[in-house]
Image 1: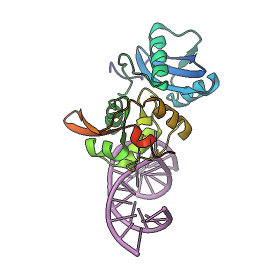
Image 2 (image 1 turned 90 degrees about the vertical axis):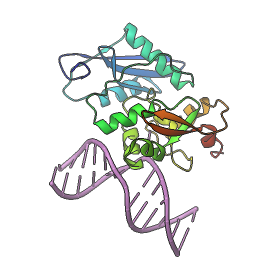
Image 3 (image 1 turned 45 degrees about the vertical axis):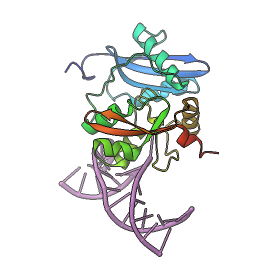
Image 4 (image 1 turned 120 degrees about the horizontal axis):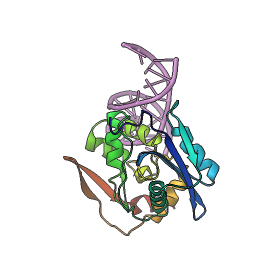
Length: 203
DNA sequence: TGCAAACCATAAC
DNA sequence: GTTATGGTTTGCA
């Protein structure tokens, strides 16, 4: 029960802008319930509120708490193509088990690399479309880097925030890697590919 | 290239 | 329970 969101805990919502982009986070007791970003405060906030579970009380705060401040800073870091500092606990416990597996796998895609819907499904079971569906309803963008998941032919696939944004995010994550590599995901291996594989066939 | 069929966890009825 | 829905993939003309 320690991980569940449901209960008597108020969900706290915070927003903050950084270099012209607004970021938002909803959290409960140092756990992230949802995160998002948008061109203005209204969008960022709207995204967040739309993801909150119905019938759960929440409150929007003007000044970020210490924890929220850290999370918001990290969201901004990811957005602008930098490494995330520290890891945050996501409120996954109430989500379907397979959804949890997909999200936990996705967070492990390293900066500078992408993987495919099919690669993820091969690594953890299930099918590519199911993975795509879960990405489409990712409540933790961009901290769960669903923008690093693309189609098997290295075209973009989709993105909740719009494909333009997906390209921008990936464009900032170029690190000059040349070869695919395999990363260990609890007992299974996930193949990841340099983000350049995607960027080069956009022109 | 383009199209059709197989695929698979979820959400919605 | 059952059906509908994709941010897919693969095979084949």
